[in-house]
Image 1 (cartoon, one colour):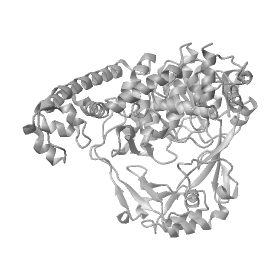
Image 2 (cartoon, rainbow, N blue to C red):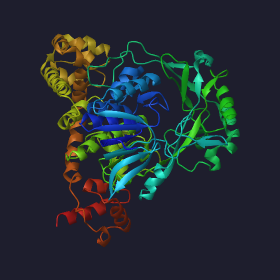
Image 3 (cartoon, rainbow, N blue to C red):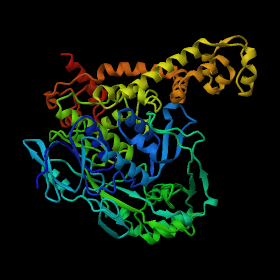
Image 4 (cartoon, rainbow, N blue to C red):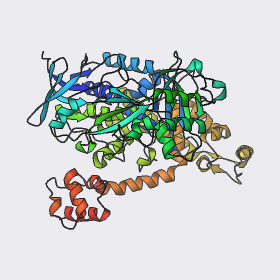
Length: 626
């Protein structure tokens, strides 16, 4: 059977595939999304949460660019917390606990109602390639779908294999079949294929947990939301998470299962995520620790299922249960599903361009865990960029590329394409050199104008950002212009353990004090309070937060902008595409090898390749000036 021709075919309906399909269709490309099960769209296979350190910034960036992840999160979240509030604003990271069933159903509803997007339940087993260009896909049902571009977002399903102790079987997730054959076909086309592994913990029946001995973690008193759009609202009712701890007995029980652990016996060859290791890996690597913190997370509003974050394991089921029962609060715990590890194929991302298009095959794009990343947020942003660029490419338009100075998404893609990864890649704030500029609060200001220019953001969204920026300027002017006298504020300053003033000062100088906030100044100054009440209610909180950050951290922000300005001088300096690095003897031998393999397009990209030294970059700059 042969389908009609599509502009773009997206394979896989996880977080990457959903963003890829909706962004492609939004830009007017006739799109088909193929997935093996239409009832498991965007499943939260691991913990039921979105956001977190650096990941929250990514979700806000996806939203600012016209993606759906932030809106879906807002519509399905059951708890919101802003992490790292005690640190500077560059570290503030929104995180939401979600109802995993509602999250998946919300995404399904969006996909089914997106214009220019069709859905088909099947498995893609081959990609049709003609003269180095993708021409379509072939499915397990022997359906041939001709198309102009393909986006592969297969997640952990490519040759996936599940491990529980000495038991192993094929699967993309427990209870779901893997995708077999596609990665072997791509290998035949010349792609490099490797293996990674990841894992997940037991799912526990909440009725069997003694919550009275656990530490409760409620949500924020004033929960925010992820999306900058007005169509979602903050939470009114939240569900708590809890903290639990392993102990020496737990560790002793787990060690008894090591001889049957696929992780230690060598049956799992792929490397796992360093920053989210299994519990057996943790007690082996940190043998001196008597306990490890665990997060007890609800999987929804109307379910008793709880996720034990930090207790991922591939040990035999009886060992998992015995260890679980040794943890205070879980002595009588019953489980719905065991923990397991999964090993799967991925394609080293140095085989990609910045658009997520493969270097080897034109109009073939990879996004998500297929590129060696881990996490819903990392996958979703790759899918968004791949879907945008697939649609732009077939329409003959310029590619959409984000740089490291523009977005966390730009940092992630640059890291993958330039450096590759030898372990499942996870985003952290420390990876972003310019994180004071790439804050979660200003993602819309940074990125919505770019989204609007290519058709991803509506006129309404763009006008809303402009209105927000206008009010930020007005509020900043008031804070800069209004003065207060000692009699107005000294009592309040004493209450805040802040030094009293001896003469009139501008509100701005008080806001620079770390112990004072804009909320404090509002109580001290009637003019400021009156002005804030004039800010439209739907953007008031955003305007106040951004304005306070811009003033309080103005010196740091300006300094980082100066650094970015200097960096950009060479960042986008193009390198001759036909440059023969092997003949440049002034380069180190390693640099010649790495540059020849990577073929960087700019000096900035070359500078981030492992093994290319500053001295090597100096040589290239000299050559560029010839």
